[in-house]
Image 1 (cartoon, one colour):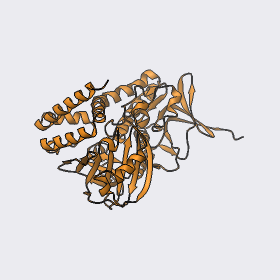
Image 2 (cartoon, one colour):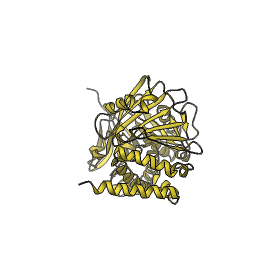
Image 3 (cartoon, helix red, strand yellow):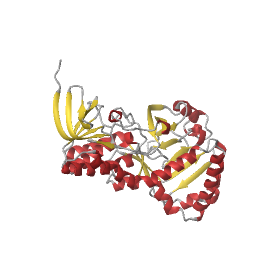
Image 4 (tube, one colour):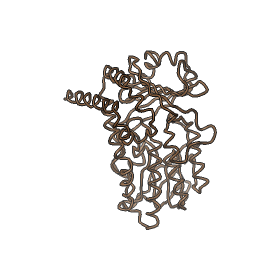
Length: 409
């Protein structure tokens, strides 16, 4: 029987996705000895995300522009469709989003972390946490024990290791189930416009068609009800607009994943332990985007961990500062997005028709054409809320929300 090896480090990070690798980067730059353990043998694979991200937020983290081959396209417009094909278009004055090759982007962050001094261990799945006297003391691998002063869980939505802490994890009621494909061609799609399909086309979320400059595209959807593949088939062959756009297209790649939409979990820390990224549900409830929130909370985690190590105190009390700072940064916007998500989920297909027509008549698109901030959506709406078209839209949506929820038992 092979004897297990022992290793020591300051911080162990579980998972080399963007949140885990960026946390490692920030810690390494602060002079902390950090080891990252990734279960797969290549960072960024399998890729589960469309990689549609705000340019403004990427710039804030120093990730725009990026090295050649990471950015696939940029977008200055979006078309929103009801299931019957009613259309509403937002045309912006300049590109505000881009799509990334997520594999290359994830690898880019990991490379930066390694250059800063972090050590990555690939093809090293963590089996269990080491827990002694109510403190997380490190991790157990197949043939190795790794002891650490602090363990950071960035394992993603599986939450398998997180559950070992006895903390309350993701809300199963807030999950949507996504299918993401890559198709070889599209028709009648503007190259810098994202196509979005609402309502019963993807119950509880939406569908998307994101073109690449080479003529291929990312096509997918998520739903809180039923089989996402069934809805994708319906979108491709029955939706009055999408079926024309993807006619004859060949699916080259398919991935499935789960997205948490309930907002950040109530507690992300315990003695010797923090959770960052999707495992902590640090994800936008409206769009399901987790990269920017994950980077944001990863940066906060690194500062809190550095302070805890300097104090030689990794107790719950010291690490609770992480939760407080994340909440102070995200809670206002998440609260707004949760309300908006509930409103969107309450709409019938007929309501979607009327809303898109109403927005078109009001000229809401012209009101939003200067928007740059789309990750912090509560703050974004405060910036545009005083404009007449937006005020009228808010009033209309508010009446719809009250009417819809009053009718519910």
